[in-house]
Amino acid sequence: MNRATIPTFFAFLLLATPVSAQEQSEPDILPESATCQQPDPEDRIDITSLRIGVRRHARPFSYFSENLREVWSAAPQAPLALRNYTGYMSKICDAVLADMQITRPADSNSFGYSDVKVVDVDCLIQQDERNGTPKPSRLEYLGDKIDILCDPATITNARRHGFILSPPLFLSGMGLINRGTATIGNATCPAKPLIGYVRSTTAALSGIPKVLEANELKSYAELLRAYVRDQTNACSTALSTSYVVQSYETHEKAAKAFCNGEFYYYIGDREIITYNARNIPGCGAEIEGAGQTYSNDRYAIYGKISHRKGAEIRDLRIARFFEILSQKVVVSPSLLDTAYENTFFEEPSRKLEAFYWNIRGPRQP
Image (cartoon, rainbow, N blue to C red; front, side, top):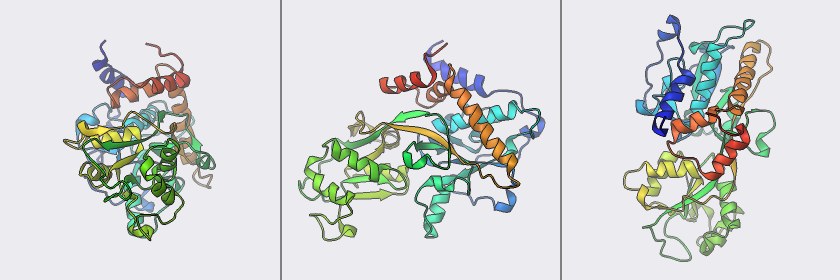
């Protein structure tokens, strides 16, 4: 079997199973609009529903797509893909949710498509920002609006308390890319923002210090240090007017601004920033620096059990999700291999392959 046929074979082998007539006739499996929808009122979400958080703008790991070719690998019982959410992390979650529908414990409530409520976290963030009530992290929605977060969330010490954590599912790193045709000009104060990043990510607080440690952008080290220390800098007398960094709402907007030349360097998780920039017509061939990373970031799926009276069924379903996920990850062939092949269609880097080996051992046919 050649590599081009592997994604198709394993995707359908993993997910395709008979579906009941009730599940086939679910009315809400039609594609959603490309814009954010109003979330279901809390009184329409029963206490047993499993609320799965997904992302709209985190390609290639979790995103909304109206292109059916990007979500083709899902079988009829995959609730995220049927609502047009796809990507590496979404495919992992879909495989587990499909398994939960198939392998129902004899002593538990039945679990089907209608028991999964898909919540777009990017839409929640936009709504809270408009209302002036932004949360410091998207993980703050766990236990409140969502039960499980299926997105590229980096494992950090600060995030280990109060959550259920999956095994590490991907190894990425903070990267810095620029367009080879773009020149900064002024060697002291850039005419435009030096660095662009997406807010609500770790790029600014974690990435820029890593860039400084690697002695990158030496000509602008003092400007970046002033930004990290929340100080004024040599190019302005107020941070509000200093051209050091510029934040964007989503990676799609940041990538578009980067390719339009609105800032010079795009910082973020390497796979995400390069994937989004190369999606912009005419931009991909000019990208430089995509091969270097300044950190080793492990992604995981996060969850939170409420322990509230009356929510026992939901809590059991959350626990079962992570039980099945752990089983599917550490065996070989691993769910990680299937998700990677269905998303990237290229050989993993040597570092990523070594990471996979340490998670699931030698790969079995």
